[in-house]
Image (cartoon, rainbow, N blue to C red):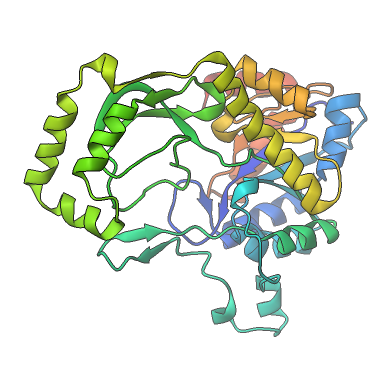
Amino acid sequence: MSLSLPVLMYHYISCWNNPIAVSPERFEEHCRTMRRGGWRGVGLEEAEAFFLRGTPLPPKSVLITFDDGFLDNHVHALPILEQYGHKGTVFAVAGKLETAGDVRPTMADVRNGRCMPDALPRVDAPYVPHRLGFEERQDMFLNWNEARAMEQSGIMRVASHSMWHRTVFVSPEYDGFHKPEKRTRTFDRVDAEVVWGLPRFKARPRLANRAFVPSAALTEAVRALVPQDKDAAFAFFKDPANEERLAALVRGFAPEYLGGYEDDRTMEHAIRRELAESKELLERKLGRPENALCWPWGAFSPLALRIAKEVGYTVFFTTAMGSNPAGQAEHIHRFKAKDKSGAWLSLRLHLYSRPWLAGLYASMRI
């Protein structure tokens, strides 16, 4: 019987060079290593029963998870999981899943001669040239037909990773201004009205923080100076003198006039909406109850946890490392799967399947 269930955390299964990407070839090595070592990727339902009711799991069970809902999880990960007899779970940002479209081809279709490699979606190149001259971030996400097909296969389950995975401004401190330019992060959208030229206030995860709200006076003053058409805003910021005019405008606001903090009622409403809408959408689109929530960035407040329970979530996944004994549904640990060898992964599976070793290893943060 498993004493501690290791939970793997993947994001991109992609050839893209990124710290949270694991190449398809490396992911296949991971799945092959697990199978040869007797490990089995279990389904989310099995893991929920273990965490909620203490239902035993066989030794060498592992839960394989993928955050965000990227299309490469369908194109690359799904066929590999199927090939090696594992199951997986996608924690999808529900609002990002595409509402239309057929089920797109996967690597299995290429291997079986049903399509050519160039017919696969552009999942390994999230940046595309923008006509204004910078690279634009265009991550590709699953659509709902693909989510349903993955669940019907019995191989992949799609669960909640919130509705939008957004941040909030958290203080009047700022660094630069919002302008049309290359975005380096997928989830950098702020839960607020953001006009071109608004200061880039310090931001943190929505579900763990009280929002700092820019004042209406500041927003209108910036809007009056900076064109809000994207092309015109880009041209505005090409002139350093314009940016200095904007900086002078913002410096003219005393700190207390830059904005203020949302009240308790507003914060609770925003958190409830973020959590409840994701759950409702997944249940309506996939036709079954949704119990599991993976916190975006692993960040949440006591208020967010209370609200999540109130709207009906019962199993909660974090990004913290540690052991996962039976009955621990409120704070399930995961560890990041890196683009490293199968031997690297095998060692960590052995560590995280033993409660005291998992706790010791996580405290060392190696």
